[in-house]
Length: 199
Length: 148
Image (cartoon, rainbow over all chains, first blue to last red; front, side, top):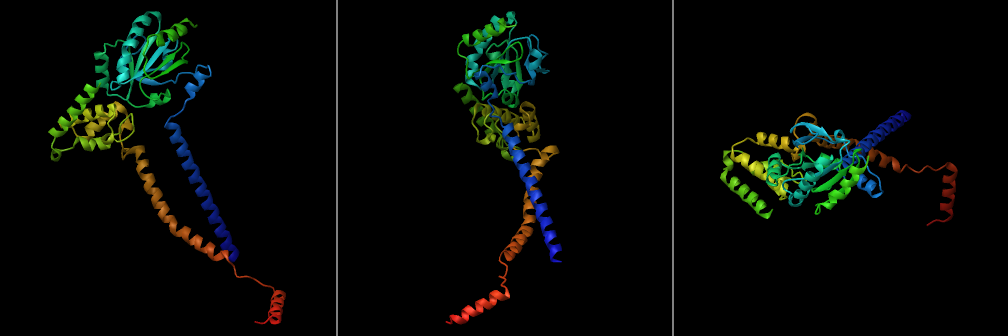
């Protein structure tokens, strides 16, 4: 009788241990997923610092304002579909003062390089679409833009905020990441000339 | 930039003042339901430039008499579901509401079993000392040799 009680107690203890272990593993998995989803990765910058060109994340977003090689506004386009064209990808928002200050530099770059096969492409982030379109009108911006109301593409690009800029080469790899405001045209023209010269 | 922010703040206050709370939803109620996309805090305690834009967006629609659901739907269309401060109580998002309640219920339900197990273990921790007859006789001898 005592032995039967002991074996029942052992079984209950074993079941309790297994249930506790499963619960602990689930909680740890949730924490890991949560931490991974909250971003904070610096893999792109780490690769650039070590002299590599990491592949640009294949983000797919709706077009806010269309341009050469892009579908009409409202339709979605993926970055991978732009392979073969060097891309200056500028993350901006209408509420961002430095974005307003640097916009004319991107417009000048667009006017200078659109005939040479490069694409200046805005990416409006965490913004109201009406305000974003008003921003483009007010600043006489003619280069195309994509739009992401959430921060998913910002996470994928490992950006910390706006403005940030990426130079993507013909093979769809990130060649340069500029954090913060672009203050001189040379910051764009020097890397653009380099990636345009590459095969 | 400062002039623009000031204009946005003044517009928000003017629109908020124009709405009598008793008539329907107030901007403040929707601010609490919404999350600032740049700072991840509820909109009512955020004053980031993005939050000010969204507050204006809400205040304009409240002034037009739109319902809370209409305004929240418009915000989700602009920013995705992450803009909501609390997950919706439907579909997969229901998990976020059910799981914490379930955990509390399971935890409370486990208390009697755990306490009973602890009590049983504590009772079994100190078994009565067993002494062999030889040892008992030796002990008796020793006690007899050293009385008092």
